[in-house]
Figure 1: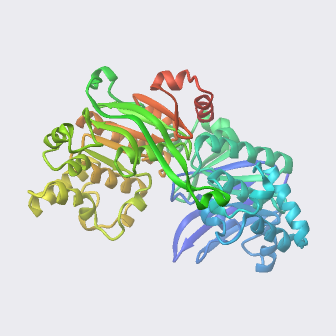
Figure 2: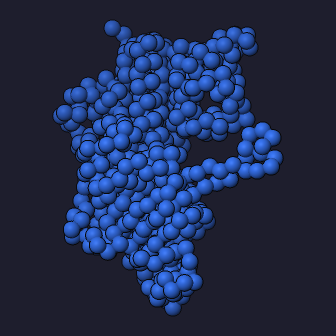
Figure 3: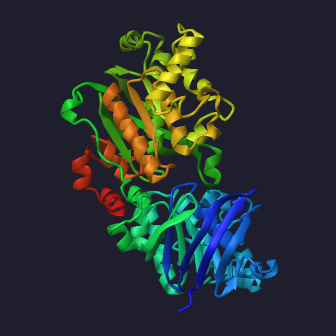
Length: 542
């Protein structure tokens, strides 16, 4: 049987530097092939090269679709192929969708351009596609702009647009990376159902091995622009031959934390009682002229974190977990009480506040900032691109350790960078480098160093590994585990990843729509979940 897609000796080069090195793979009609690898392996560039969408690139070899080489095809013929026979779902729908047009208009444009449908017929087909992809209230949602949809709904709209012309081949580039675990499962189920009903071939670009195991028929593993191994999913997962494939499959986070009885469980360092966060919103209609409504993001949260232990907070986007973290840091207004070592952070002027000054040895606000530090989700956006590594990591010392000389500050910066695994031997001139000169995992290590330099006792970790590849994620989690043991740190860990919670947390708290629906020890909650929502989260991660 002739393959629908036959990639032969494909190479991709930029300015004479080859990044994809003569790869070969085939894809039959109705088959699902996963192209797997870490960031920079060349998998997305390969997918884009199939449709000649890589700008300023030199392409070599052959890409035969239905026997015709897309690399040699005239531009007009290739334009007809794009969207009609080969469609693509891009990784981040918020950047792939036009913010100035409604979802309905963007899908209708494809139908009017590609299939010459009238505006009325195209709009009718738009509603059918939104129904097929599971978007509720399709007539209303078709009139929404991308920012008015949730992440899952935007991804469904992207899928609807890709399926508009009933393509024979779908290129899906990390279609679930930015989604919560339950939404990932929903999108995966949707793609599987649509693939069967349309008999499409699917080339799935991903680094999510759990997704590959559930979805794909075959797998091709890429490393540094080479396909190092390929075969049936069950065969490769059961008996990986290449060292890189073995490393990917072994990259699941490993639990290596101090047991609760060895982590001073009685020494409470951080606590919240009746914590509530609400935001004023406009009421619909004329009522909004006279009064404001309220959206409650966190509803009466109560918990505590012991010294040397990790409290994991898990939930989907919009559950209130990041708002809870901001409230604990004092970065958003909240009602209720936040306690540090038994002293209230709400009233620094009372006796408790005076004691807090003694603990921190500096003024109250500065003492709280020094004692509780934060590591954000995306290090690229949380690190200033205009500051050097020395300025970023050493900034806290300029505020909290004014007694240090310039030379002493620099020495402390180097020591802290070395502690998180970044040395001058590895990176000559590291102090004068900028964030863009480092990989994602290295940037997150810089962010951790910035938090550690003032010697805090508690770290708030807001999705610290969600933007990283699986092998880098494992490295960063191992680093955090080691630092907790060595420094006796307490962590408030915010995540939607069940595997990260299993590896890191002593206690876990499950949030949904601002409510804490279940909490307890990590083993009790994840091994025997009681609430239906927790059960759904755990099942989706299995």
